[in-house]
Length: 303
Image 1 (cartoon, rainbow, N blue to C red):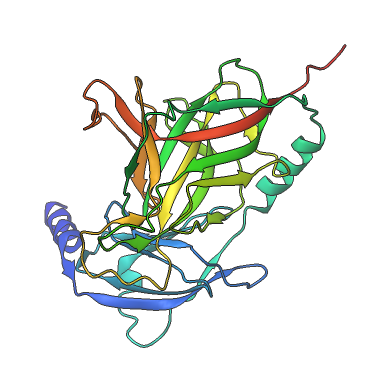
Image 2: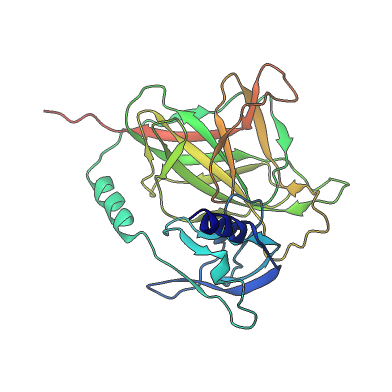
């Protein structure tokens, strides 16, 4: 038994040769191609996105036999594949079929038809818009910022506003980015939990834009009694080729300061990590994306 355990440990730590995977990410039911699906080696900062046509090309560096490839996309169940099962595919494409969360979508639609909301819109933000500054986030990273509910009543989101830095006059080289927007419940530990909306929302702001508004009126995104997490992921367009591991993405989402640690981050579909470091601009405060929302509260049912 001891000899077997040592052998298993050696196999798990054995480094496998580098290899490039390529193929197409597809919906397993409609067989439509899926753009911007995330492929990542679990717990490692190495991953790619599928292109506009669903194709991908993933150069996997040396990995161990225990590593796992995770494919994720909002509205679909995550898919996990052991690296040892795929790294010997030298000629054949690896086409990946993703299963949509059909039951979850139906449940959301049913719940939304049973709710009525007030007309007056409430505006909330993560901080002071007069104290904002740009911050470049590398491709593949997602930040989730807590938007607290001051009245602790159920509601729904109507609009999301992002403030951006105009990068059209920058004299240094930058790389244009897209952003994926997601909405999460708050789990029992205070971390981002289950998704509250299953649409893959990709926004493509121009480098000169300063304000970007997303209309959420008809999407039925709930605003829970505790609040919600708003996720912003930096997505690399397929036409971008990086020249170095050190780079600046643009347009930057402007950040602001808060007294509380409201921001969590992760690389692609890896585990969330809570930010504990104070801002480099203000040592007693925390830096978070400056986000504004408009929401409406649910009407109270009359007996």
